[in-house]
Each structure stands twice: as structure tokens, then as C-alpha cells.
Image (cartoon, rainbow, N blue to C red; front, top):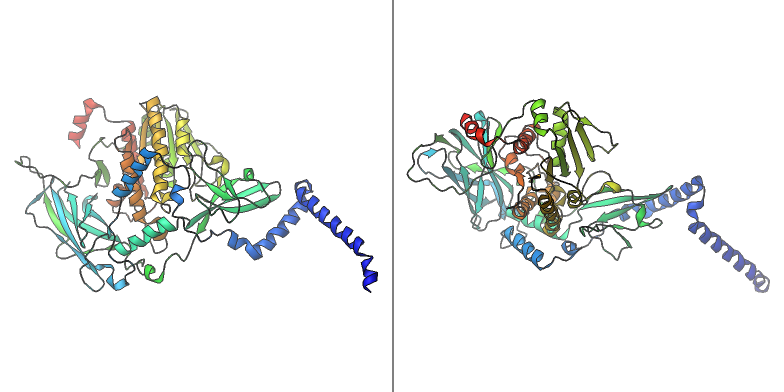
Length: 571
């Protein structure tokens, strides 16, 4: 029997080799097949993979991403020095023991505040409030680090102002409010997160920067693949496609598709959110109606009466905090830099913007300004670029007044549903392409999509933007540049892990320090949101957006110096 089979071995070998050659030839020439055959083959492959591996392949691999901040160009000595200063500036007090049970953590319901008695209070003075934080057992906390925000307001007057919270790192805090209008004022104090939760957020930021992950679609003909992308990816998993920006050195990577080349990428999109990020102990610190954005009660009165300003004061008390502005009758009133004007009809807006090129770069919070102007000024006509909704780029023109409005999103990381890879632009590169001048207005907002990454990543991005802003102002000093700050938003146990106000506050502080002293204007979205009576939202409501736009227009078309004094007195 074996003897008879042995004579067929050469035939079997030849047949196997022929089949192998045929298979290799087909793989290397798959794009030359007819469309139907290629599509069928690849659909079959994808179906098999979807059963076995796809869900696993499109999720980020468990990995310690603490090196993410260094994944890119190393900072030079001067940059490293600034980075160290900024990280120290935003450092947060640590509790002596981590992982405490809930009953020993800060409880806003057991905590309280007391308004300090300082006699008669007048406009121009300040209100001081002492805060004492207790745990769930009613015992005083012995350390600081709780994230508190404060507001002073008078609902009947549509008035409100943010307060300054000072942490004494012993479980007590002092809040300072400037007194800016007469009448009865109410204190509102909120614990956004207990100190124990803040430490968890800090750990997630440093170790789980991929908890929001991204993906890109690659396509060539009828072949397509989707892979995971991010600022940093474990290189041992599979080969990478390197999309580092050649001008700025900003890093971005995707896993290389199995059958397609890196230059076949057609889009960028949010992939999703990692789940199960917390231990059982940690999850206790993130409970709605328990310890996320919970008011702190007053021990005694929660209001005081403010008397009109005293015209002659022998000694004017030094204020501990001067906000950027406050609300009165629902209108924002800046305390420095510009006289606020109201542009209540479309003709006032178009007259102000006549002959202007307005560029808006950044996330969806700056896109709100574009949408507000287009919706309320009928003269603006949008050009149809067939851009995805809420993604852009967008452009609107008013040919009668020679006005052009433009919006473009910033480069990755950005959590939009789908952005064409051809439209992924970095703000600094866009600024370098502008001529600038007195007819140019630039508005920038970049913060929300960086909340999951180590702060060093944000510092690096702002450094590139700052350099580009300086180059623009050197070319054309008359260019007006406005930068929007972060703002607080609605939080729940899940969103706190990705978009907490604590992340935003840290980035906001870095932004203000890095652009301090430059010829730019801040639109203080943090205080404009915190001081308002509307609940916090990532995208503030129209009442707040309207005040932001009027503030911007007041900078574009300021009150003339000759009229300034009369204008202020009339108010």
C-alpha cells in the first residue's frame, strides 16, 4: 500500500506548490481583481475577523500610558523649565491616606459654611466666608484638596459673580467675594468633588490617557480597514502609521492596517470610552446626589445685605480677589479691559464687523459663536462645503459689508464623530498661514478634548499655538486675538472620569499662565458660566453665549476714548 502511495507523492507536492503560488499571486494582485470579487473576498475576511477579533482589535490594549507626555519631541531646557513651573503651579494637595472608605471621605451634606461678621458691608468691599468640611461620620477633615466652587448672586437683579476659594489644607477653606452691587446677596457653595475623588482623577489622567480612544478608516478601492489611533500606542502590538505633524512635531499614530498602506487613511473619529476604570473603593467617590456637585449648606444665614458704596473712605480695604466681571440684569459687565456694549440687532453687528475676516479655531465651544452669529444675522450666507454636521469647516459671508466668518476644528485629539483626514489641521499651522492686520480677528478655544491626557500634552500644544500667535502679532500687531477659557459643565459618575471640571480647571489655569502678558484678550467662559444662574453645561446656553459675543464685539468695536467717560457715567 505504501509503495503505491509513494509514487503519487510528486504529484501531491506539485499540486500543493501550485496552490501556494496561486494563493500568493492572488494576494499580491488583489486590487487588480474585478470589484465584485475583491469586495466579496474582503467582506468574507471581515466577517470572520468580526466574530473572532474585531471587538478586541478596536479596543485599546491595557497599558500604562504615563510616558504619553514624552511621546513626541523632547522639550528643550527652557521649555522643560516652564513645564516644571506650570506643573508645580497646578499641583493639588494630597490626602495623607489613599483609598479611604466612603464614610471617612468628604461629605458635602455634613459640611457647612459660616459668613464672617465684618459689620456693615458696602459696594466696593468684600464678603468673607469660612468653610468646614466633614466626613460622612460628621467628623472634621484634617486635610484639604476638596474641589469647591462658589457664587454670590441676587436672583431678583439677575446679578452674580464668582468667588475665590482658598484651601488651608486642614479641612477648612476661605471664600472671598467682591461686593459689586447693593441689595441682598446669597452665597452659593458647591463641592464638585471630594479630595478622595480628585486623587482618582489625577491617577486616571496620568495612567489611563486612552480612556477615550480614537480610530481611523483606511480605504483603497473596495478595500477598507479600521484601526485604533492615539497620541501614544504600544509599539509591540503591531506596526504603526506615524502621522506626526512635520511643522509642529505634534505626535499622532494609528495601528497600520493589515492590507492597506498608511497613506490610505481617509478620516479620524472618536472610537469610544473605556469602561470599568475604577476599583470598588474608588467608585464610591463618584455618586450623583451624594458627592458630585453637591451644595454645601450654611450654618446660620446664607445671605447678607450690601449697602451702596461710601463715597469718602479714609482707608479702602484691599480685595483678595478681583474677578474678570459680573452679571447685573443678566448682562455681563467686565471690570477691566473694555467697556461692554450691546449689539442687539443685526445691523449693529454687521456695522461692527464690516470689512473683517473672522477666524474661529478650536473645539465645539468656539463653534457656538459662529452658529450664534449666523443664526441671528440674516445677512450672513453660509457656503455649502458639504461638511459633516457639527464638524466643519464652515464659512459664512456678508458680501454687502465685506465680512467673512470661518470656523475650523483643531487637530487631534478631537472627539468628533468623523473628520476627514484632509481637514485635520493644527491651529498653529493655520495661524502661520494668515496675513493678519486690523481687518483680522482670530478666536481660539482648545481645552475640552485634552482633559483625558497628561497636562504636559496640553502644555506642548499651547506652546506651539503661543509661538504662532507671537509670529502673527509680529507680522501684523493690529491683529486682534481672543482666547476662550474652559467652563464648568454638568457631571455624573461616568462623565466625571472623562470631562470633570477638575480637569478643565487645571487646563484653564495652564492656559491663563501661558498667555499672560501677551497682546491677547481672554473670554472668561469659566467665570461667565459659574456666575450665571443657568445650570452648568459643556455648551453654555444662549443667554451666556450672547454675553460672550457682545464681549467680543466690544473688543472689535471699542468705545472711542472721547466717548468712553460719558458712556461709563451713563451706565
